[in-house]
Every structure is written in C-alpha cells, then in structure tokens.
Length: 327
Image (cartoon, rainbow, N blue to C red; front, side, top):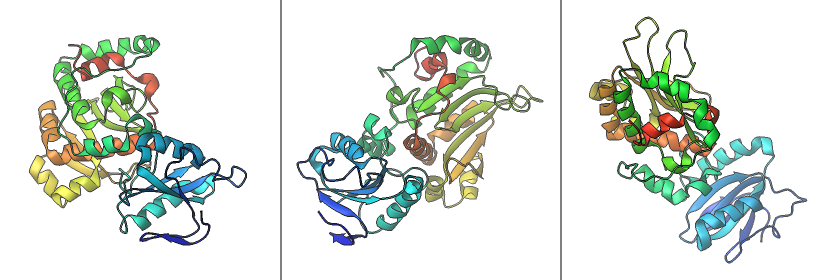
C-alpha cells in the first residue's frame, strides 16, 4: 500500500492511496474511517481496464463493485476529496485518463460518470452490451407494482384513452420503451415514469403523455391549445451521437425531415430535441439507427445520474399499454 504520487502501469495517480485487493471482499481495514472515506477512486481490472468513480464511503462502494464484478478487480486507488467537490474531481479524472487507458465507464463526458446505484440494478457490462444491441421485445418482461399507485392515475388514463389518436400513440410508446429504455421491467418507477395527461404547459401546449427519466422528459406528446387537432411529438436524444453519425444537425434534418435543435437543459448538456407532427413520422424517426442510439445514450446517462423524480405520477395503466399488455 502506497501513499503519494505513484505510477501504476502506464497511469500516474498523484495523491492516491493504491491498494492491491486481489482476494479481498472488503477494504474497510485499509481505508480509515477516521481519516475519511469520501473521495474519487480508480479500479483496475485483470485486463488493465480502469473504472473511475466517486464515493461518500469508498469501502461501501468497493463492496458493491466486488458483487458486480467479482474477482476481476485486482486493485483500487483512492484519493480523498471533499464531498462538495466530488463531481468535479471525478469528471476531471475521467477526462485525464480516458485517452491513456481503456475505461469501463459506460457514459461519456456529459452527466454522472462514475459508479452509481444503477450499476447494482443493471450491471455495467449489461449496460454496455445494451447500447449496441438489437431492438428488444417486451414479451414476458416482469414488472413490480406498488398497488396503491395505480388507482391514483386511472382518471387521467381514462381521459387519454378516450382520445381517438390514442391507439397510434400507444404503438409509438411501446416502440420507444422497447427500443430506447434499458431493462424497462427492472427500471420502471425507480428510473423512468409515465404520465397521462399531465398539467405541464396546459395553458399553451397541453400534454397528452410524458415519459421522464431522472428529471428530463425524454419523450412527450402535446397539442397546441389553439389547434387541438394537431400533434407535437418531441423526443430528446444525445447530441454527440447524432453528430457522430451525421456530421451536422442540418445533415440530420435533410435525411429525416425532423425539426431538430440543440437544447439547453440544466440536468444534462449535449441534448438534441427532435420534433415531429405525427405518430407515423415519429415511428420512422425511431427506426433511424442514429436516433435509436442517441436516445439510448441519453436515457442510460440520465438513469446513471439518479432515479426519476416523477415516480409519484407514474401511470401504471399507461405502463400496461407501453409494455403491450392492454389495448
């Protein structure tokens, strides 16, 4: 065990305490609680990959990683950082290391980058595999449901289901959930939620439905107050992924016909907002590989930032429709 500026393999780790953890299930005896366990850490795996994270208690976080990765972790380097500075320190370390060594951090620079509670629900390797997997089906997906929540939103669902456009919207929602939301059965309610006829912007653009991840509405459908027969379908996606595929937003617009702009959200930078005027156009948009990849990237990033803030308004009847279990 070393303190100070050290080099491990081809990586300089100034100010880190570097510990060999092969065979260890806990590092509680190596990291003094009195001296502080809050800080940034770097895991090293058997194949020399790294993983950068932050923790209020690194011993607790290591135990969670050990459960997720098993004996693949051979070393951890830890540097104490004040709690208020964790996000900045973690981001800086990822930016410093990502060019030098392979990193297993799933999410790129926007958003929360290190280990999160989400890793215990959906293991990191499963997340990474899902980003490039084929579109999923939702047949036989298991869901959990606190029974008291369903009844609260049934009157709103009844209003939505009475709209003649609802069957087409249901098909779109089912496709979006199956293609762009990671492990939707496990993450429902905790990491994504659905609202039927929410009150958002009711004075100008009344909403028909909204799917939210963390604090961001990643898919929503509304109608202009002055033109209630029209639809506006908005899908948020990762801007960087779209630019990687198309080079520019103008090129993307020319290819797809969608209206696209760079959004300014406090919760997450580098977001593209895509807008269409019909469910058919929205379905075609989701079938575009770059859009599906960009929507997946954004949804996963937001889930790793933390749970959904809108779980109290989750509509299980609309969830049934999204999973294809009700007409």
